[in-house]
Image 1 (tube, rainbow, N blue to C red):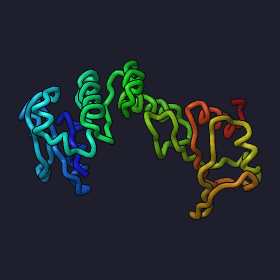
Image 2 (image 1 turned 60 degrees about the vertical axis):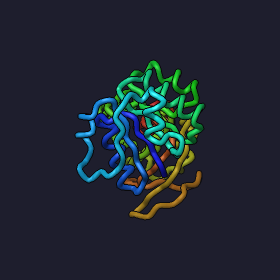
Image 3 (image 1 turned 180 degrees about the horizontal axis):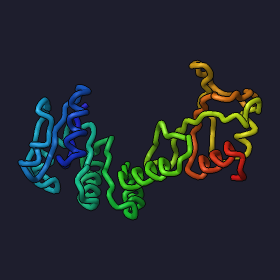
Length: 219
């Protein structure tokens, strides 16, 4: 895959090197040549110095032949304009933007852009860790609207059917049940045992209700 990364900050340089390691053709763009010093010495992709808003710079980076573009500068406005240009003018099928200010994320989504908000995602992860609950996120979709969580079944739910938990919560679906190291697709009638590991897909509201349920509280 031919990918352009706009912005060679900490995120951009790491992303470019990861993509390069996976065997992709990578071009990274930044308006400051010194920014390329952040790249791993093993990076062998292309670097293009110049303003990403410039048509000449983008075309020098190969935007006309790119399969994907990630705009990850520290400017939400710049990211939005570059990404919108990539999608609407150059018809790049896979475009992702970095979002700093969570209040601007709805604007990016309204433009049809895939936006990754490190601020929202980071705050959510920290809140979960501070809560002290033994429920851990193992996969996050989008910006955390839906995630897969992993939890250990407590003794109070030993012998209960899985459906008894699921029926008490909303926006929560069982994904996998692991017992003695062996996983299976869960069914409503599965009898839970203390120490079982349950993976569920849920929204933030759904996982809050499930946490309360597992603790024997009202959701």
